[in-house]
Length: 127
View 1 (cartoon, rainbow, N blue to C red):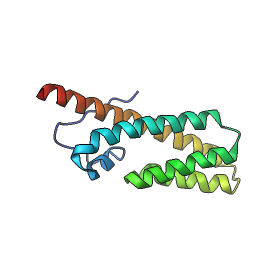
View 2: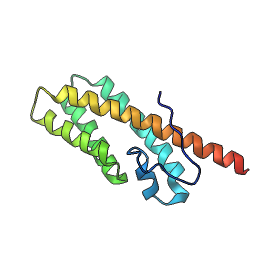
View 3: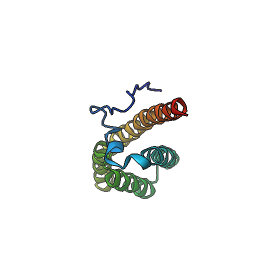
């Protein structure tokens, strides 16, 4: 698992996996992060269970792409879009693109979980 450090009150402008959180209102960031982790964890689990069913995998990839687009998580959106395109075209590179997408999502989950932990620690410190 990745270890990420977050400075209280300051976001990591170089982190492609958490920048989207700072585009959302501050009063809903923590909730959005929790929903992101839960949703993406579920989607990764779905992809792991459907490795041979292209149509169902493409449906999950489309949901990932659309969800990432909605929150402004460009790197995941672009990877999902590329993977979807390769899958629809039955390209041999689809599987390697899918593996890259899943690994990127797992990395993003770990980083957002670290961000959540930091937010919880800040809330406890204030209380």
